[in-house]
Length: 510
View 1: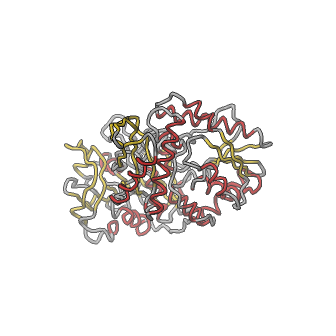
View 2: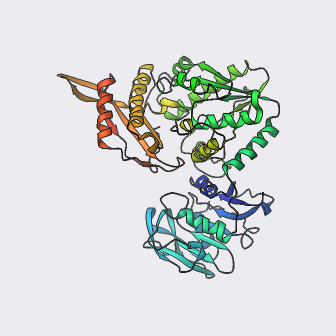
View 3: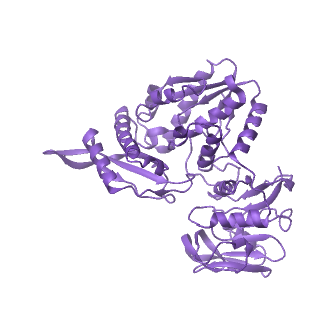
């Protein structure tokens, strides 16, 4: 394949999102650490330099070797990448008087510039940097400015090297996709041939070669990721796939039985394992979010180790890990990205478990997983399910976990999700759920004073989970839902609605 984009990771949490935006244009992208360039660069028709939490002015500034790229291939520097190209080529980068973070608008766009084709002054862009480019290198041309950032975009004369201080990969940059398309298609001449069908064909072939006739165990959850992973593996290895659905005691109301029924008729070999007591016993008394995640991950692995002994000659454990899982845990590329939180299905297996890991969706974002699922013919209702965290309700119960708290939150969650469906709102929301807060509040029910739990409802709209905005649900719906929860769920006397976006908040509360 010689129609790929190489993205060099300088540690930005948005690096994977750049790759996702490129693939949204039906162009395949690969992300590599800035200091581990592929030996064969002939496969790549263009290169993008990511942002970074570091400063080009610092002693720890990262220095990629661009000698085989600069002037030889179309090159785009984003944020840190732009500042790097300016600072180390005769320009100057200085600390901003105020941190330039958030929405801005282009106040100037150079006329007849192919890089900004179909992008006009006034277009909204997203800034996220503490440094700013004060002076451009002499051999450059200014392409765009905002009111606060004069050198928002520029190019080097005599070569296809471009730089922008804003982030085109986030949806807050309204014409960001157009900018990337201008660079990749119009300037770099790339073909838009990477599709879900192409991914399926390539992945199935790779799985056949990698796994051969060996047996694979896969943990099904009823969600989109594990379902698509299962169908991909089934397409590749057929009867050698053994699916297991584990009840960790932290699922939604009735989900264990509902999920098992869901897979009937799909041709998958599925076994249900009720390990709820085992998980809840090990979580008893633990309130630290990271410890809860790690405990769930450990018990999950132990259960699978037990089950693997029941499948003769099982060699592989399959997981539905996707890009956001990886980037929020640790840099997927081995680059310098900073950890936000850990995920229970990331990081490999302990030595005692003699299974190799296969993750067929590791390079996909959620919306891509859904498109691949549609290509595989998976039912639309299953593909339309909201994401649900691997640790389940454990990270929606702030503080320690008890069976009583789980039961309360299951009822609250069921009322919320069922209500979204009845009101025709479910498909307009990317992810929704309820949180049980570790506080009691005073209330009055009937003629009695109460001191009971508070729950928070959360509903967001997103494409990939890397950024998300809260959904403005109708007041009438929220009023009805709040009344139903307080009247029908013993132990709850207060309901609040979370109106935080990501960033700065995360989708889950833990």
